[in-house]
Length: 183
Image (cartoon, rainbow, N blue to C red):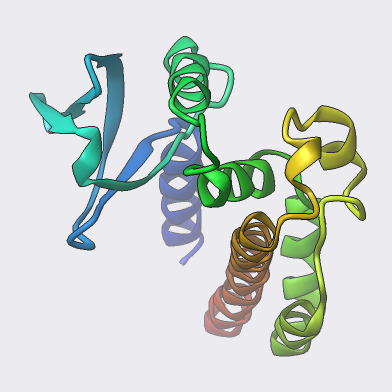
């Protein structure tokens, strides 16, 4: 049984240690792979050793696994260069929440300790960019903080991420109880 636990722990560590990009299309199809580059309003995306060129009009969202990657900064520059009349307020809100909001590790441990009660508390919370010290300091979108569209997308993404971390913590606690009970 301990062997199973170590194999499971290694698999989880290996999966977490290699960040992957997640591309969601407007038709709700989701792909996990690597964004290689951005060129002429297209995203070059690699999945299972094959490259695909996806027009930006077909993309609903991109979640980058590594925000320190040069392709990510190119993507942010591209998105801000197309933002002349506020078309990307929702995208700006989601990106700010994803990159700067909350202590995700702390919410993982809240999920371990309190399970569904932590998720209920987060669902009832009202996250805003002003409440997040990192968001307020690091965001380049401070002028959008009062915009209702920006705030709506920010809150939805922030809550989703934190509830996801709490659910992961609760799942880890359940797995630990099952493994410990089997010993």
